[in-house]
Length: 137
Image (cartoon, rainbow, N blue to C red; front, side, top):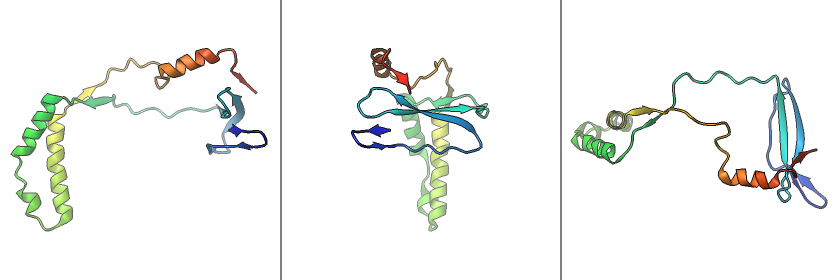
């Protein structure tokens, strides 16, 4: 919420399913004229997450060189010799992805993430400076 001398405006919208139990309260944070809204969801459960472990592709100078080499070995006649644009695209995409997947293998991420990983060091410092002045109305 943004407050000024004679006005108050809501900047962000929150859409709630009326069948859920919730409470919304203003959260005076002392950051200029921008106050936050605190929503508390009661009896709320998150769906189970995907069981597939998180992964990244192993992309480095060596795997990029391998990818480029594989692309250079490809015969592109089946793509450029075709008159159907959809067939050309699908053929190109299949070739490209085959080279991509074989060059950049999946590597599982071992998670040692902590809660609220998105909170930056700057936010943590600001919160420590604001300690004692933060309250909810």
